[in-house]
Image (cartoon, rainbow, N blue to C red; front, side):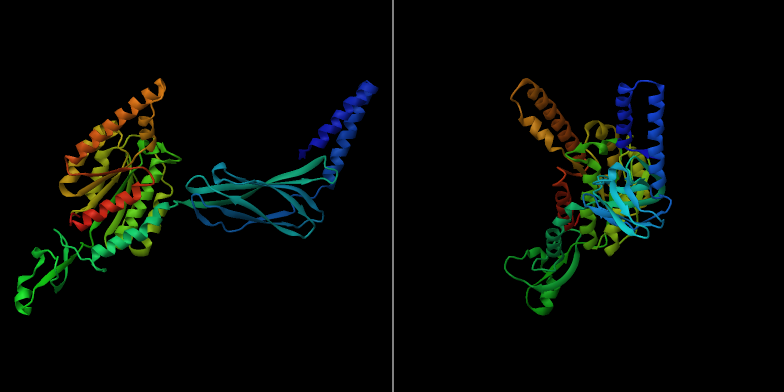
Length: 430
């Protein structure tokens, strides 16, 4: 049972009656009138037990997109049900309004729609529906809560997908499927063609030239079927927010773009997400199934408030890689974390594999370093300059071991990482 504001107003009128006729009789009489009105209203209200609620199948959406959650509501009782229905989604589901007016005649059906714009990844859930049926006088209502579970799966937005066509165009050029063929250490022989002015003389095939009695050059294409391992750092440093999103989300977006590109290039792409232990992994996904598999595996990941154990992470990497591979470490370049955890572990990886460290830079540091209009901003600029120097020192130290470093803001990191991959592939360094 639920009481409305009208019941409170009726009780206040009793106070007025007490002013005109004070005494216990007036008080008890008005209380009896109020109780009788409430009881009558409840008796005439439609039965909430007769209301049936069914939840329609819920869609899969990307973070930032909107969807509709539908409830099919029917009145199987003999009285009209007029009131409110509350679809109790958790706050991160982003419901525009969880309360909906309800007016069902006997035997009638209606569809209640809740528009959702989720603000967090993975499953956003709802457990119950509350129905409130008002009496015809509007003083009281019958109320019941029904179990009506459901969930909307929220996946990564993959906003860097827009860069993929341009990157694939570059890949086709490297692959020799357009007018450009490349030559480089570690690349694969593709075909022979006649020499034209401007070709590298080192690519001349002298045996074929002797057979044909005209100058012939070899064309090359980038190596295929190479191994690419994406390693996501899910430790506490990945929880820091850059702009409106955590560093981990920006790193995931960069990983997806690189995976889509490398998959199209014919390389095998795997994923490992870890901090002090392995959180998730994707092995063996290829072709059109690669990106969906990565998106599903990344969606439930959240930063863990622990330090990354790079000894454990490197051991997990080495147990999975039996030959040379490209290992992409998506981890923040925080000076203390790099010095104590990453740097001691990197030499073991760099001896056998090509290693890239990709980090999300915070544009706010550059703005702080440039703002010096008062004493507070000067202190902020000094702190920003110190952080930039420590970051540069970490990059230089990693470079000593042959590690490539890509350090860029969230929107620029995915294409920058993909460009570095194409550069290494063209040079035959994978």
